Structures are given as structure tokens and as C-alpha cells.
Length: 73
Image 1 (tube, helix red, strand yellow):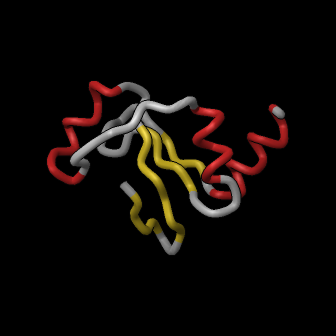
Image 2 (cartoon, rainbow, N blue to C red):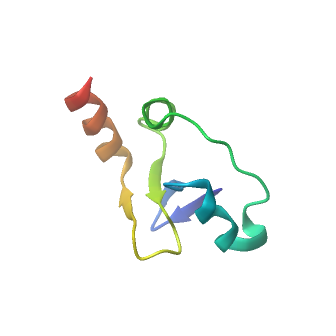
């Protein structure tokens, strides 16, 4: 699921597949992928919201994703 958050395109991601149904019909399907692969595909274009709709989650800006990949490459 992609959405706008304060002018930034964000992608929703979940820490486990069990969390996906809580969002209801907004997410009709899910894909399980490697986190590094996901961050590499988002780098420079999109931010990431981990576990939207849950208290256990956080946002990463596009610049933050770039910095994570740079620091852990």
C-alpha cells in the first residue's frame, strides 16, 4: 500500500504477515520479502511506514532509508 504522508510517498510494511489483516480491505494482498531488498527498491524514491495502525512501529523517510543502506552496506 502506498500513501502520501505530509507530501512524502510512503510504503506500508509489516513486521509479520499476521499484522496485515488488521488493516482490512485497504490491503488486499501481501508479499513477504527480504528487508534489505525492500529498502534497496525504495531508496531515494519512497519512505517506509513499519506496522501502520499499530503502536509498535515507526516511519523512515527516503533520506533515512538512504542512510541505513549507506551505513550498513
